[in-house]
Amino acid sequence: MKAAPFVHHAPRTVEEAVAVLTQVGHDGKVLAGGQSLVPVLNMRLASPGHLVDINGVAGLDTVEVTPEHVRVGALVRHAGLERHDGAAAALPLLRQAVRHVAHPAIRTRGTTVGSLAHADPAGEMPAVAVLTGAVLEVAGPRGTREVAADGFFLGPLETVLEADELVVAVRFGRLPAGTRTGFAESARRSGDYALAGVAIAVSTDGDTVTGARAAFVSVTPVPDVLDLTSVLAGARLGTLPLDAVTEAVRAHVDPESDIHAGADYRRMLAAELTVRTLVSTAAGAQEGAA
Ligand code: FAD
Image (cartoon, rainbow, N blue to C red; front, top):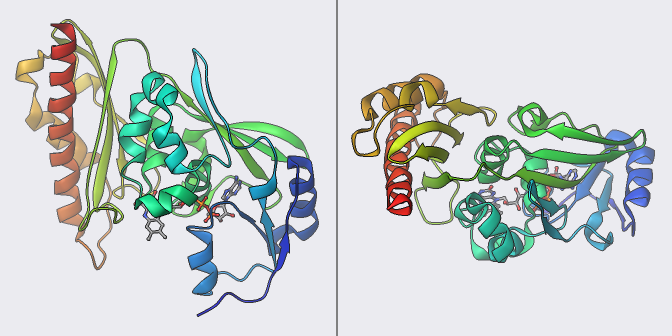
């Protein structure tokens, strides 16, 4: 099947892109990497009359590392973020997670900002965004605004973005010194969307846990953070209360059944992945402290 006819717009600046989006309203869609939008068009799940292709917009393809955040522009491809050593050093969770996004060919074209705007609960980077307290920079006809990731996602494939707005960049927050991170997921085949996944941040003081937080992939309708600090704070790295962690995760997630896996199986996977990732991340902390 092929997409319904559309008008292709090729703005050169953010202002031009916003002007077109404003003009076409709900009949327009931003085109970034096209790795999610083009299949949707080809299956005729959407038929916008106008595509606003931002690939020629200058200045959106940079990664900037500051003491506070890693800023990723709207045209940075997943592969570009994956390869960026400065970003990986500043916030290891970015590389830990982004290498699980799809296959190399898709990561070469698809953008990290696009995966946030697409808001698929099976996306890895929305979970990273909420766990790191990310902020999205949004341009529109009323000016620019900043939206915290934890208020950006409204539901599966739904965000607070208006039809005339464009995400210019996302700023992933750097985590406090001493925080260790881990990411794990389970998929039927390497590169497939995850049946369940988890991103974890653990902080320690010597061999004692002082804080732990997790965000999930494919098992919550919107990415949100489970604060495990009350379950884990004060626990020694070698004797973490893993049964309590399992219970907390099982109570928090709300997976759906589909042709790939049932809800119970996904819930079990989420808990097991959290426990394993917590143990391996904590073990890293122990090694680091040694
Ligand atoms: P596009 O497809 O161009 O756009 C997606 C949506 O976001 C559209 O609605 C578009 O209008 C909007 N949008 C994009 N950029 C902006 C912006 N700057 N401002 C406002 N709106 C914007 N993703 C995962 O996370 N994990 C996976 O395991 C995974 N597996 C995949 C497997 C396959 C076979 C395929 C085809 C895709 C897979 N993806 C996966 C999706 C991939 O990561 C996409 O690249 C990503 O979801 C969207 O990025 P994009 O740049 O391609 O966006």
